[in-house]
Image (cartoon, rainbow, N blue to C red; front, side, top):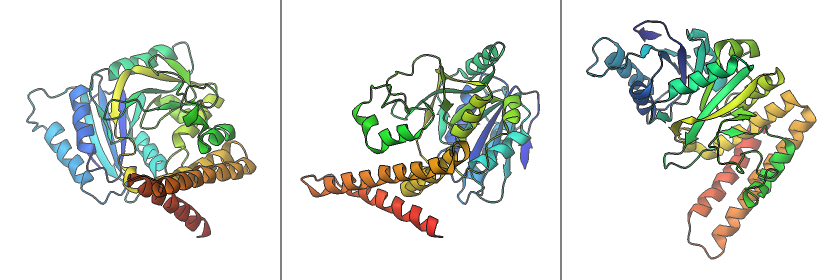
Length: 337
């Protein structure tokens, strides 16, 4: 573990890093530029095999080691540290490990492929503090946008068998404005006002250290994906309220790190959601979900295969078809093993 500088902190920013060399430098630079609340940055390196851990060490030495070349050094950055798990333990395990090292009363879990582009982190924290004086407040998320400025649906309704059915058979795409068929992604709403929501994306999630500890942290049964849905579900079950706060925004390379292997990403989502249904509902629900997600993949395999055969020169259709075929092979191959 390597750390520099000390001081009282209100907020602990926890970043789980795994082979994010293309992104983490920009992420850290943006925090230094725009952080407007006293905070520490904790980077948990999850067995990276690229140069990202080295990028973090250079950042620490340059920005916080007493030899910063910046004339406008951000004094809100009180502590920066990096420590290694030694292997890829998955997001939940690494995030919990970071939280155990945290000194702040509030925890901000942040993906390394996110960048701040404006001030307002302090406003997000103030919203949380103000809200929790009267309401049992759980997780709070900000507005997340794509790198091209379009909206990411970072707050959603809890996944159910019905909502998975709508997604698997394209109802959510055909009837985007419907509060029923578009419920999961909440596409019927412009995401421009504060709302109580079911769950927030773990790409950026603010939660008090006390609530995080009381709820039992992230469930380590999840290797990747659905741990954010699960913790928000458990918070809701305990009477906490989760909120979406749109007046602070970050940019996010959606699946920027995971997109290098889309079939693996889809397979991991499949498995994590099955764990979620089995844990929070029943084994029968998990089996029904698994069939519906199979139909999600299978229907898209058929759609893109047919589209690639009839009257189109768009090679992307063939790529997408191969992607979904590979997802099926990965999933059932892993199940056999």
